[in-house]
Image 1 (cartoon, rainbow, N blue to C red):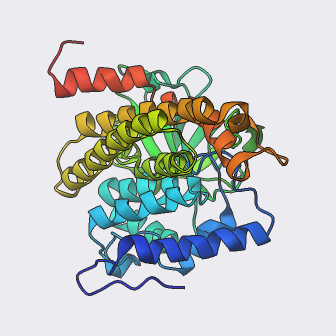
Image 2: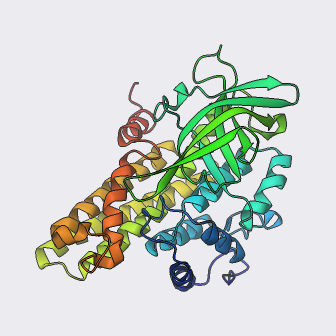
Amino acid sequence: MTLPIDVAGRLADVPAEIDAWALALTTELEERGENLTNGSPADSDSRFAYERMGDAGIIGLGWPTELGGREMDPIDVVKMEERLGYHWLPLCGYLLSVKTIGNAVLQFGTHDLISRFIPDVAVGRIMFCQGFSEPEAGSDLASLRTKATKDGDRWIVNGTKIWTSSAEIADWMYIAVRTDPTLPRHKGLSVMLLDMHAPGVEVDVHETLGGGTFGEVRLSDVAVDVNNVLGDVNGGWKVLLGSLDYERVTSEKVGVALWVVDQLDEVAAPHHRRLLLALRGELEACRRLGHEATRLIAQGERVSRVSSTCKLSVSLAMQKAAALSVEILGPGALVERGPDARAAGRLAAFHRASASMTLAGGSCDIQRKVIAQQGLGLPR
């Protein structure tokens, strides 16, 4: 199925068209035996679903037509992502490959990198994972230790990356490395594209509390072509900040939380419905923050203060939704399998996954710091 888009790059009816397509794919995934409660949509993944999105022309909708995109209005793209989240499609690979990394390649990549990667991403042939965090570097990303040493026409990479979603099924890693240890820690960093099938790459998969998985990636003398660097060598901090702006517009999670509210609204008592109505108001604010950040990104403006506000607001709203599910449904909200499971176990999966939202993609404290310094002008 290919979604109909008019000449102005807009879906004729975003919710209706996306809802029909997403429901059909959800049914197909269930028939294949894929577990849709494997974490919230941002935590779970499916190579099959990603390829189906490529077949439907959903990947890279906002990208130029000559690169396989359809030049769709950016606000319509985030509306679509919200609806995909609402229907619990496994989106981790899409969010990384398109929303975060694909857009970063378009912004910071050379013409050669763009032409090599973006058309294949747009049809679902290439999937990325993101190699940022390490055992000693999470929210404090500037302390990363993975090292890349120049050797002729290639970089030799050694180190360990952790919390790497989709690592076991990705083709390439968008990796942050230290290329000059003599420079201050925010300097001397570079971002490059590393082949996950290259010699020296080992991936261990670990289950998460949220029901999804993450990869621990060990890199031993992995060769990366010198042409695979995004931006300037030792100028990776600028690239990292730019890609995080895309990542923190979490429209798909607004969709997931709205689905939870809709489920609870069907059985809630009147006093609980007032709480749910207030939560709907918060989620509408999150939605509008996402639209504003998307508009600013499309205009080429710095949006860290807005995208961090968006990420923080969605994280807190998801935790409120999880807490309300237990308050309204009692222990049944925590049952994932068996006859007592509510909503096919998705509420329990959502409750478990909501805890990670305050950490993944930058903790709530990090978001508050960005808002304080870049939004309010407060000192460090």
